[in-house]
Picture 1 (cartoon, rainbow, N blue to C red):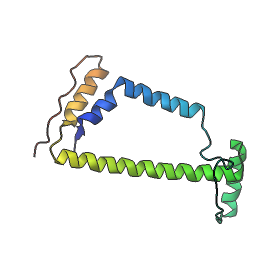
Picture 2: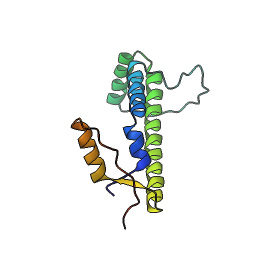
Picture 3: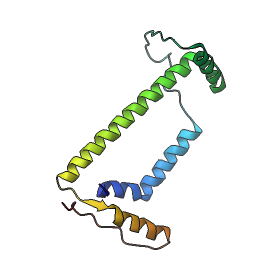
Length: 136
């Protein structure tokens, strides 16, 4: 390993990309929209058994969040599923990128990237590293 895809590094270093990610983070911290609103979505009933302590914790958390226990549980399940789907998508993309690198796509060595980032941190204005194929 030790090498980053050229397109991945470009996306990471892009000022627009960084600003966009930062703004998304700020907007997510400032306002969180409920994942599912029961009046808008047809729902079937599922019964789950919760230990008494967990049920009490859910009730307290829902009250603190200003929502119902049902809404809190639906949001929690939705968040867990979305995290799982993001993780799966991340791994799938990593596998695709690794296959592309093995097929000869250009990459950046970690040493070149680290040196470039250090120069930026030191206030220098270095030329970006040049991507090349992996030496075998």
